[in-house]
Amino acid sequence: MQEPEFKAVDPRRRFLLWFVPPLTVFVLGLVVLLVSGHLTGPFQHITVVRALLASKRDFFQDEQVKRILMARGYQVHVTPAGSRDLARKPDLDSYHFVFPSGHVANEHVKTRRTGKHAVPFRPFFTPVVLGTFRGYAAALVKAGVATPYDQGEQPLYYDLDLKKFMALVERQARWNEFGAANGNRVIIQSPDPCKAYSGAVLAGFLASAVDDNPPQTVEAAEELARRIKPQVDAQGQASEDMAPKYFAPEGPTHAAIAVIYEHQYLAHQLEKRGADKERVLLYPTVQHQSTPELISFTPEGDRIGELMMTDPELRRRAVELGFHSLGWNGATEQDFAGHLAERGVPEPPSGERGRVALPKAELFERMIDVVGDCR
View 1 (cartoon, rainbow, N blue to C red):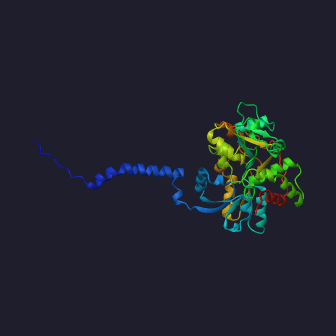
View 2 (cartoon, helix red, strand yellow):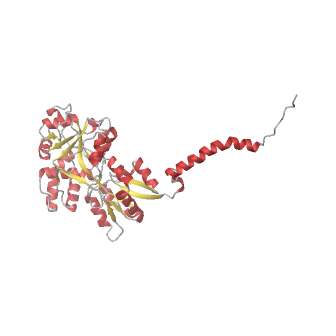
View 3 (cartoon, rainbow, N blue to C red):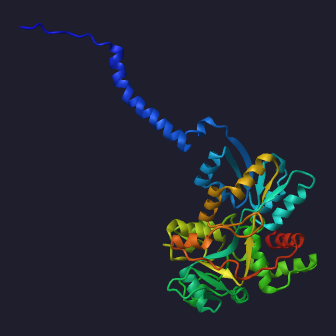
C-alpha cells in the first residue's frame, strides 16, 4: 500500500491563480476605454469657459453638447439672460463670450466692445414663429386669417395673414366666435419685450401689420409703438420664455398662441418623431429669422466659436436640435429636410416668405421701450 503524498502549495501562486483572470478582464477593459476615448476625460485638462447666453442657451445646456465639448477639453458655464439685458450687462468683460438672440443685441454688444477683442461667429439661425394648437388653428382657418401650408389631413404648419389677424385683435374677437371652446380674447402671448428678443420681434410683427414701412424717425417710432401697445398689453404679465408653458401638458390653457423659436418646436417634434399632432406652428406672412451671433471676447471664446463652426458632431447636434446650420460664408449647410424626414417630421416653410422690415436698431429700441414700458 502506497503512502499518501502531501504537496505544499505556495500561497502566492494560489493568489495569482485567483487574481490573474479578473486582472486580465480589467486590463482589456481599460484598453477598450482608452481606445474609445471614454477614459481620457478624468486625465485631460478641462478649460471652463464662462458664457452669458440668451435663449440659445438651450444648445449649450443639451447633455450631448456638453459631452462633445468635454471631449474637446471645454466646459461652458452658462449664465442666462434675456437678449436686451445681456447687451446692457455692466460686467461683459467677466465672460469669455456672449450669445444674444438677435441682430439688435448683437450690434449693441459689438458697439460696446469697440477697440476690444470681439470676434463674431454665426453657426445657425432659427425663425421666430407662433406656436398654437390644432383646435385654435382650425378656429383661425374658420375666421379666414390662416390657411394650412399643405393639404395633408393633419398639417403641422399654417400661414397666418397678419393684417387680417390684427383686425381680429383690434375688435377684441373671442375664440368661441369661431368654434373653439374658449371664451377668451384672440391674442398672442409673448415673452417680455423688454428682456427677450422674441418678445421684441412680436412688436415688429404687429407694427408691420399696421404699417408696411418701418418708421424713419424717433417720433414715428413712438407713434407706431403707441398704436400696437394695446395689443401687447392685452396679454397681461409676460414671462421671459413662452416655450416651457407652450410645451407643458396644460399648454392650451396657458397660451392659445405663443411666440417661440422654430428650433424649440422642431426639437420637440424630433424627440417625439412627429407624433405630437396637436401642437402646430403659425408662420406670419412676413417672417423674421433670428441669426444669433456668438461674440467672443477671449481666445477661449474664439475656440468655442470655431468648434461651433467646424466640429462635425456639434454641427450635427445643432440640426438635431432644430437649428438651420450655417457655414462660414453664411450659406445653409447639412441636409436639414432629410434629417427631419428621417424622423417623420415634415419640412417647415422657413425662408419661403417675405421678411418683416424691422426699423433701424436705435428706432426699434425706442419702439420696444414704449411698447413694454421698459426701464
